[in-house]
Amino acid sequence: MRWRHRTLSYWVAVVARNAAQNISSTLNSLLNQTLLPSRIVVVNDGSSDKTSEILTEKSREHPIIQVLDHPDRGYDIRRVPSNINLAIASTSDLQTEYLMISGDDCTYPTHYVASLTNRMSEDTRIAVASGRPNHFGLVSQEHSPSGSGRMVRVSFLRDVGNRFPIRAGWEAWLLFRAAQMGLKTNLFSDLVYAHVRPRGMGHQFTYWGAAMYTLGYHPLYASGRIARNLIRLTSLKSSTALLRGYLTAALGSSDPFAAPFDPSFRKFVSEQQGREIARIVASVIIHGIG
Image (cartoon, rainbow, N blue to C red; front, top):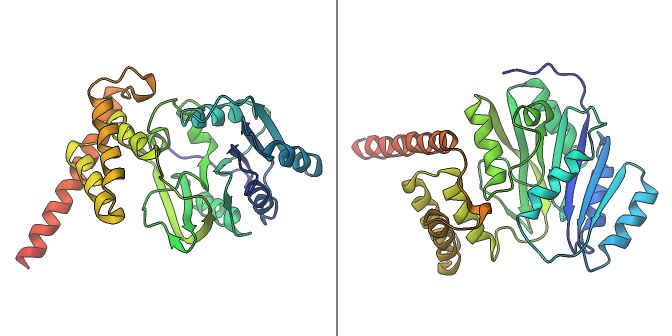
């Protein structure tokens, strides 16, 4: 599937909660892009600090900033995709080619968006792309597009329903759906942006464990992710949380957020990872023989 390039236009979705320390920097970095967004939609998810006041002031200064306020119902990670869906629904009047998803604690170099959209316009098979996050000098070593700083081709998003599933693994779901449709996802290592808050802390490991099951991860691949986490972070607690999240979902959690995705989709994910495991094993055998 290919899309004809029309215009390098985009809008930004930001979900903010108690982000008073960082939200101004995030918005300023978006407003300072060499390629300006058509709109910045900030979903204020019940902030109890001064986030609301900051957003009110920013939206008065910059009309392209639209704020959607929610009452405080406590933190719940499942509201992130729900809030992004609300932002998408609020932009039905826009005709842009890209959607950028940003955290409330990220700042981007001025050329970030222009570089991403230029590369995506040159290769119309790229459905999702991002740069690489840097947390206080520690640059992520992941190889897939990050959740924040992610640019999504709007035509592709519409092809998959123009909304995100309210389910564990919703961010990775988009990448696997692109692969399932024969499209590409890219992480451009030379585009580095700042991500202030630590990534993957606390409850998120349990969530990621559940996501591995809902998405249909190959059991060996899931085991490898848990082992890699233990080796990289040397944290038994986080690795145990990953395993607990995976097993809780696999054993039939009553939480609909942990329900498995469509069987055909999960089969695709498992088979894709199975092929990757086979390639790794073959490479090890060949290297050992050599």
